[in-house]
Amino acid sequence: MVRKPASAPLFGVIERLQGDLPWGSLLDAGTGVKSALWASGLATERWTGVTADSGHHAETQAALGKALRPQDRLIAGNWTDPALLAGEVHDTVLAEYLLGAVEGFAPYFQESLFARLRPLVGGRLYVVGLDPYLAGRAEDEAGRMVQAIGCFRDGCSLLAGETPYREFPAEWVLDRLRQAGFQILSAQRFSNRYPMEWVELQLATSRTLLARIADRDLARALLAQALRLRQEATALIGRQGPMACGSDYVVSAA
Ligand SMILES: C[S@@+](CC[C@H](N)C(=O)[O-])C[C@H]1O[C@@H](n2cnc3c(N)ncnc32)[C@H](O)[C@@H]1O
Image (cartoon, rainbow, N blue to C red; front, side, top):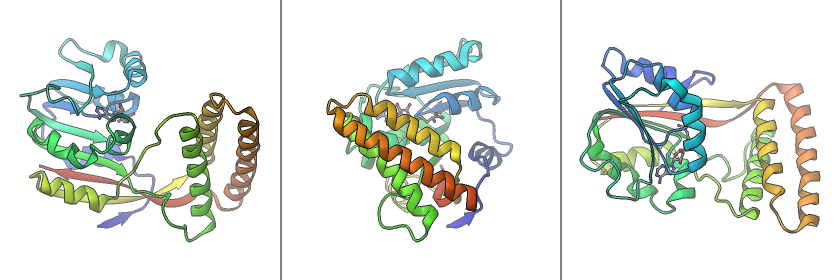
């Protein structure tokens, strides 16, 4: 699989892959503010967004506002429900960072996700995902810092009773897509660079989670660790710029 430099906006990659093909009816199988707003700017005949999360549902609805046309639908549902969109076929299906989030809503369902989506795909399926970056020891300082912050955030999630994302590599996705009867049209990796804004967002999320931990001594110790990570990341990014670590991927299939 070809690895390309970071910073290519991945929605732009999908638009280039789509070329002149009409978007037709577009199903955003794991919707959220970013993908819904992007899709609202495309010439679709109809847009359907699905989320398993009531918070995402409310945020997406608010962000779309009047951009949600009469023929569009924003649905709260879970792909484990066989009745969800049963019998429907969509010209274009988007699974943008859906796979990594499944762990929180349907653990162990990842193996079946693409087979579940298969009958809904009339034309193209686009899968956007993140290669796992927390497993193994990173080779350089930037990678180790990104891992430390990611592990810290996920640890806070677990302590607060939430399930962190579980990411899967692009090769795993390609295998499962083929098993589900898809033909792979293209697969590309895009190297990631994590700026200070990413650090701030992970640590802000962690602080929100820590507020829910009953053991306040533990929470205080972890808040102090958040401060240390922030200082270390600030110094590293000051020296090297945004931290290079791992890749996102875009797969198109039919
Ligand atoms: C990372 S988030 C959203 C990313 C989104 N494309 C965006 O632009 O913000 C992943 C989405 O997948 C949804 N999701 C995860 N597992 C799901 C499942 N089993 N059934 C339906 N939706 C699911 C979540 O509810 C959430 O809306």
